[in-house]
Length: 265
DNA sequence: ATGTCAGTCTTGGACTGA
Image (tube, rainbow, N blue to C red):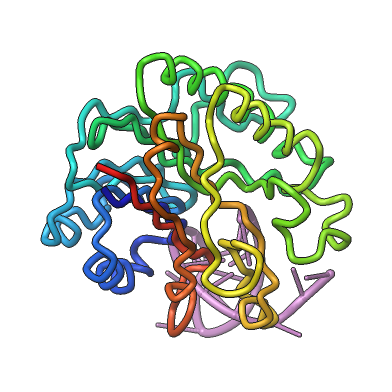
């Protein structure tokens, strides 16, 4: 059973590369983030030709998540229960959730594809929103963990440790590395989720994201912000996991590389 | 900090978000 997660930074712009990658890598279950397309515009037929069923959640130009599976795709959930939306500070009432989470039952597991809010800056309401989003995610995953095997994959927009950013000093005062964000991840692990750390195929750090600008990928100035959090029973089946940095190379890549996880049957 | 992308509208260039 091969599971993968990939922030594709637009499924439309990435479609040729996605299809080639699916055909070559042959994952059974794929979690996609930043599809940046409405659900009705998702290229269902194109991935279907490779044998995948699709569940997509999108709300237009930003965000967007999807699940592809050829190991079953049942009980699809768009957004997690209790998921907050972004609301300006003076907005009254609850905001509708953005398209940042989709879950389904695939291959006997509950699988989630997650795209956490970026947070923008520490003084931004988007940062408050990010922390609140994680707090509610914790509650939702706690409930799901009680029902069976689970894996929550995606772009968490948090680097778990200083070793997960290329230069921690440069990130002082920035999002993605604060104690509060790292505590949000620790709170998820405290539920019993395990961080399935992939093998970097080059260098010491399993980075999954490199900014497009300034030759960051070439210099391996990256971050590990895409994560696979697995319940103990799933984590115990992990045979191997790696960052597919080849997918970050060449013409027209995403700024994120996929993580590929092989599980014992 | 920003040398790049992608989506969209204000449309062949500017804006936003990352």
